[in-house]
Length: 260
Length: 260
DNA sequence: TCGCGTTCGTACGAATCCGTACTATGTCCG
DNA sequence: CGGACATAGTACGGATTCGTACGAACGCGA
Image (tube, rainbow over all chains, first blue to last red; front, side, top):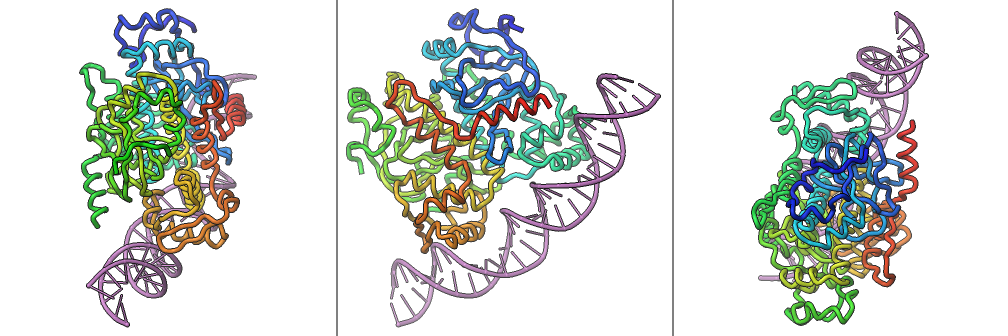
């Protein structure tokens, strides 16, 4: 429940060994169960969580009472993102979506490591930028793409984070994440199952055909994935972040629009 | 066209005079016209723009060819946000939505000032966090709220940024921003006009009744505004960021959900 | 093994929004 | 003054999603 961290978070594992002394001994693993509230909005932000094999959802609560997922973080990042801006309070609530373990760091240690600069600071800030990019992509996605597309996208994204094509999930839960009816998810999932892309069995899902599922998913899966992977790439001295949404066509369109 | 900066951007104007020497002489004003492409995705990120009386839209281009606004920045911030993560390339295209002037800083100067720490670094990073919060709110907003609500929200947000209840705007343009049909905007705007909240006259809009318009707008206007204002508050030594979306109720709901 | 709660399949009218198209009215400019 | 273009109003069938509701099937625990 409180063992020392021994690897598993992709961001932390990118930090050179020589640099890890900054948080040596200050990183412990903890277990989270489904629906555990890991971070509560408006309360003091005192710990930073680096998922190992669990997934956290950042959610927005609307006045209607509906909760919608506005972000997802697995072993490729950390929560909450606002810790990089020295916010004393958490801005949003975050809860465990897929159970598992995570590395937990005191906020003070995090800030010390951030101030020390180095690879840690670079990766943390890049991850925060990636989070913004992803959130923006989902903003557009929710406006444009249908339930089936978004459902497929969500399954692929979750698969990548949990690291397995096979994980527990109910329609009810996925409906809350996508911000749609439970019945809507049943229809979309039924469609994907008929195609042979997934298989559902009472609270458990298996992705069985990647190509089919990717084909049904919207472009947002690839776009967000590319930026996320690029943000974790620390082999070359200067990374190249690729925007899969095609800026060249964008510019052409804008200029055309302007001259019209 | 290239005069020295003399104030007008709320973020820059929060920097203590003693600290401004870092970018003294390196800040020039430039004018932007409607639809000017200020930043192009996938191209080198070489300058940072601090709007004075213009507004920029960050847009996502989808494969369908549709462009959707995923962020808006006026005199309360800067573009592009990804500059804080040392990204060599811009992640998204940004163009001028309301014409006016802006302060422009070389990226190298920006990074020097950021590395110097102080108020500048704090405000810039807080602003980036606020941008993420706002983007997340819009993610939920686009899923949940109708065209009329989002239309009212957009008008209020733009009013705050442009600093006037009266600005040029066409239905066509607003439709692109909201990611809906042009005819849909005409209907929504007609509704708001019948209520007496706004007045439209061929490419020009006037907000004439704040209370009515706020009443029609969704909660997202207030929520994003609160965080944005808090991020610019530099009077107390430790700011208190307020989340208007009500975390207390959130937690209660989560715990209830869990125990159920 | 049986009962009960969770989870899932399905149905149907209503509401919203879309795609498209056509018309009307300002506004600019020759 | 008049044509041309940009902008806005309106209409209509269709697609998607919603809200709600009911019943079936699976699985855990008594």
